[in-house]
Length: 165
Image 1 (tube, rainbow, N blue to C red):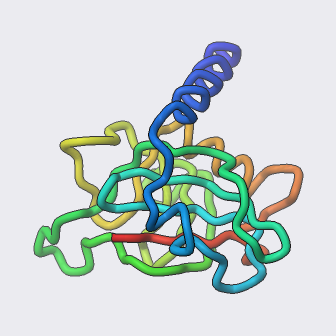
Image 2: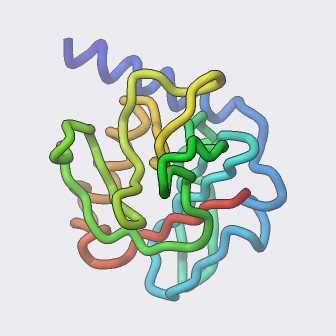
């Protein structure tokens, strides 16, 4: 079972690199480090429902590590208070394998909003403010940013999340 999971992760990651490149808003100056401490930036483009994990070296946003990949954000106000995905630049500040509501690989970036795994991602779906990712992508982000060889970068304040319209 583990080999199948590893094969699917490799397949998802290989497929993701074949998708169109990042739009100008997320690929150029729009996805730049704010705090100066960031080692990674998750760039999310709400209009295209795509995201990228990019490495930061000496304060300069560099190569794309993962992506582009499909995500689901809240594009329409459902009238339930703060249900739209908050746009702006945030420092991720909390990560947990399971949230109190049972969401897996949860990385919080604004109040109750965060990046997390979800079974239904893509066209026709809408979140309540979070950025939904496939299980495989969410697990890989969590591995790199929380439990990887560089330590817990979220807890160290070294991961930024940039959300664009």
